[in-house]
Length: 131
Image (cartoon, rainbow, N blue to C red; front, side, top):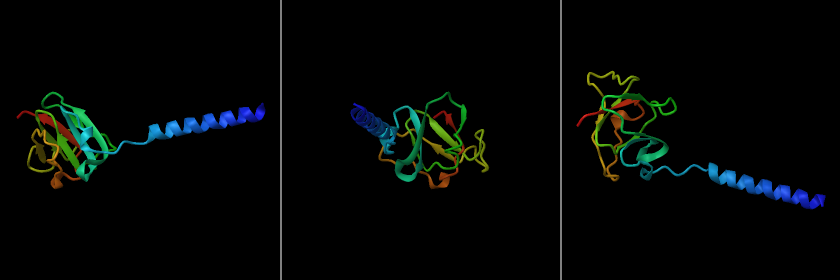
């Protein structure tokens, strides 16, 4: 009886471990993660690596990127219907003489990469701007 109980506990433990392992496996990064109406950011080129997205917010609302993504963004896709200004500093401030250092127009085309070398690993905040 005890031997059968031990086998049952081991089998249950392995099954739970396998289920947790499968659930914890991160999904592969891709453009398909970016839903319509969102601005999407990836830390690597070609829409790869860690991913974060935000829904369209009111025009002129400024948002800082979370610390884990700060100065790490490489790929960006704007699937909103507004222009998005990307900024080097928190609070939508930019060191350059321009109001923003990259302005992304709305782009529904997933084959058109919106990776900007001038903005690579520099972005700290963003805001939605009128067309």
